[in-house]
Amino acid sequence: MGFQRSKNEPIVYMQVSKNLDILLLCLYVDDIIFMGSSMAMVNKFRESMMNTFDMTDLGLLQYFLGLEVTQKNGTIFVSQRKYVEDLDKKFGMSNCKHMTTPLNINEKLQNNDSSGLANEKKYRSDDGGILCLTHTRLDLMFAVGPKFKITSYIDSDWGVSIDDWRSTTSWVFNLGSRAIAWALKKQEITALSSTEAEYIAATTNEQVADILTKVLSAAKHEYF
Image (cartoon, rainbow, N blue to C red; front, side, top):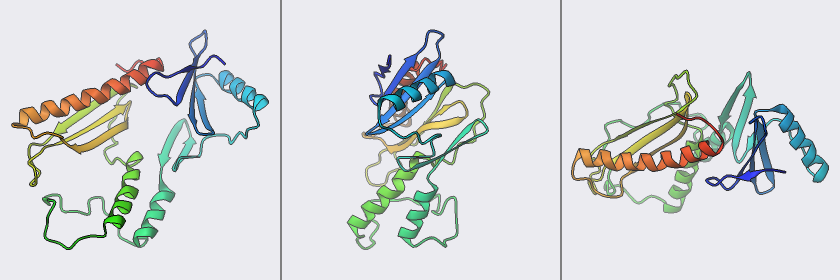
């Protein structure tokens, strides 16, 4: 059908027409998500697949891999509302009071705080459940930019971990005015100065930028 597999993302396929319209295809097991810059290409692909395979057209994407997708007025909103509600029930916090920052911002955490041992299995389960929310929750999504380009912001502290004196790297990538990738992670080596910590953070940031720009370049997107 004329699709080319992305060299950087193996589940993504692209088809480019003579007038440079593009059709993107994403595969996951037996599910397919497709979108394009031309409705003619989208409709042609849909009809071809329906005629060739026994498949069901579910219309506009609404739910995929635990993510709820709402499309209206030219916007796409992704959330995990049901997942959050299920976590609230699991933790017994359905009626709790909501707070943006429930922990003291000046709290210094360490491995041994002299408290009793937690249920390791339950902790890992709960921690993993909350970790899945990072796909859609980033509270710093208020940047406004007139151009649809990729930008990056990065920072690091220096030796704030009481246990091993390692620094923490944080970064976020925006495409247009929306964040598409972000992380906050302890550095793997101990920096001897704040300058070295910043260099380590910048190196990590460059590696992520290389991956993102390769994917966007393959999709013929001008990201600079």
